[in-house]
Image (cartoon, rainbow over the protein chains, first blue to last red):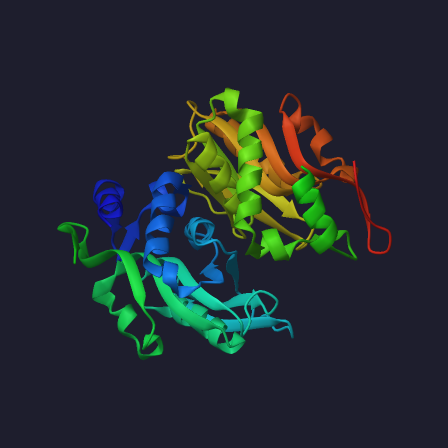
Amino acid sequence: MKLLEQRILTEGKVLSGDVLKIDSFLNQQIDVKLLDEIGKELTRLFKDENVTKVLTAESSGIAIACFAALHLGCPAVFARKSKSSNISDNLWTAKAHSYTHGNDYTMIVSKDYIGPEDRVLIVDDFLANGSALTALVSLCRQAGAFVVGAGIAVEKAYQGGSKLPEFEGIRIESMAKIASMDPEKGIIFE
Amino acid sequence: MKLLEQRILTEGKVLSGDVLKIDSFLNQQIDVKLLDEIGKELTRLFKDENVTKVLTAESSGIAIACFAALHLGCPAVFARKSKSSNISDNLWTAKAHSYTHGNDYTMIVSKDYIGPEDRVLIVDDFLANGSALTALVSLCRQAGAFVVGAGIAVEKAYQGGSKLPEFEGIRIESMAKIASMDPEKGIIFE
């Protein structure tokens, strides 16, 4: 998606430690028009899949999920991230690791909102090593829901997260795919 | 807003400890059509105020902020909640207390996204004792931004949060105002 690539090139900051900062339009300030366009593009790609839920993880995925859900005509659901291993009968839980924050956490969603009748489109802001997406897929599989695919805003393709065996058979669509990224040489898209 | 009141009456669960659970359409599953209507109503109320930013707090405020910002034609910004007293030169910070979770936290937003040129509409899912809203107003005042008002989905009016001296001169518009709430007697709106 050229619109997103352009914004990443003009406003993204590549920091050391493999961090891409796009706080000015996605991770803190939200350019709602841009995210609405991402929602429309995800709808174009997945409109024939009879999506019943758009699932994401708090916090930065919520805006993308809302606009995708609006155009797909279904509810959005967000999993919460908990530092404690929160166990309750009515929750699906899956462990994940944040390389950015260097901590483990548990992804949690109520059993009331993802079930065996659901056809789920998972969306997220970033796909890097695939840890968060693995957890979101796990929540759906525990619920017996069918994952129609994953819609990602920015994929760090060079990390190979989308190639994990856990994602076999899952269609992953990334709006911007970064082939390489370096504080000095900048960003190159696939 | 009748549409929201109706949903609260049919799906809201009043739990002990003064908790209103509306996870089925706002706090975990998001009915994006309903929130889009809330965004339109906030736009109708504040459209003459030349709003330049819609500010909220993660996570449940983000969806409301996105739809309000879309219709108002400006960006949304979300403050993060941190358990540590994160101090950095480039952040506005304000302390708040969560009565639901029984903990203190720090509301944080980058100085890059709220500044003296801004006319800010603050939005949030709940207004109860006013602690979160006090922190959001404080972030704006530190930044020298003008707060045009606050748009709240559900106000627990009986807690009197909107009457705090901190909010003097700030127009607060709540889409649903709860006069009383009880696990047995149910919910009564103002």
